[in-house]
Length: 241
Image (cartoon, rainbow, N blue to C red):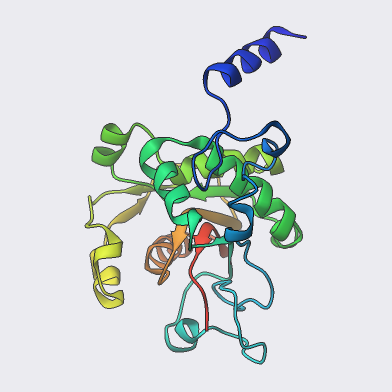
């Protein structure tokens, strides 16, 4: 065993892998999945049929778009969600966002490749662009959960993580606002940073998709800067109707 392998084994003894859903220590046979037997039936990957725009799971198979996308236009090309934002995944995403539980990002990355690997390959993104957080939050938290997700997906795909966008305004939490106020809250909140590389297609990475206001705001400024196609991938997404 090499030194790196030995260090990892010691780390597992000190910090044993935990279920992303309930946070209990995982049995040996469940450690590769990251989800315990009790939580597995309660954690649902997003499956077809999907909204052809945002990627929400649709429960009426005759619909091409969810009700939100039928009534609210988006500027990004297409999006996909990995897990439904319900049950144990709500706590999992909270731990990723505020508790630095990076194992959640690893599980999301594996499931993203399992369910959406062909889609990612078909759009051929040249870069993964995480949704940024304001520097005040980054200093307080020590990391950006969307960037942690992007790094995990990059390790699975080889697509580089490129933080093209900066957050210039420390906005109010989106979950506290109506859809209309969410869009207003994000006005002028982002800017494209200094980067000499020109991309044609990029994939925005975010933790949770609700109305799409955040990724739309990012996609808008990226398109204005000459990027041809902007796609989105989220760790969790709400249900479509």
